[in-house]
Amino acid sequence: MTHQASDPPFEYRGASVLGLRQIDRMNGVAKGTAFRAFKRVRHELREDRDFFVVDIGEPGDTASAQLLRAMQEAAALYPASRVAVLITAEAYARMQGVARLESQ
Image (cartoon, rainbow, N blue to C red; front, side):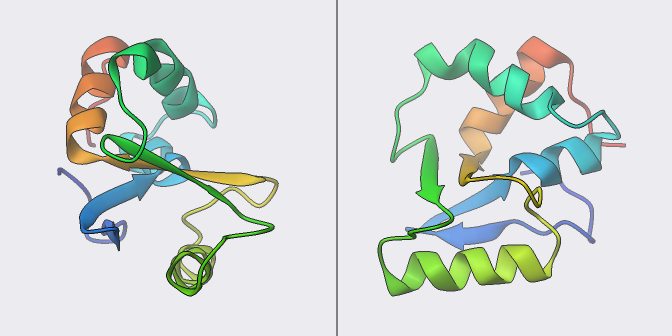
């Protein structure tokens, strides 16, 4: 997974993942660009393999709550987000292809 040192991936369920805010930031694009790219490839992806969705208000388990805390401390989530969409390296590569996301 290509990333800047300031935006290291997080580990979730055995996968390296990035949040949408991280992807926007490391590609130097406007808020929402990564989400729009994700929506364009969503039909090709499988939840719990290519991406994960974690409810920020009710994370469901201790590991998810700890991850969300760490992501919030690292400013890796948009403040108004209700869910965290966590993208794996494979899903990120597909997103790059449709949105021309390239790390700066």
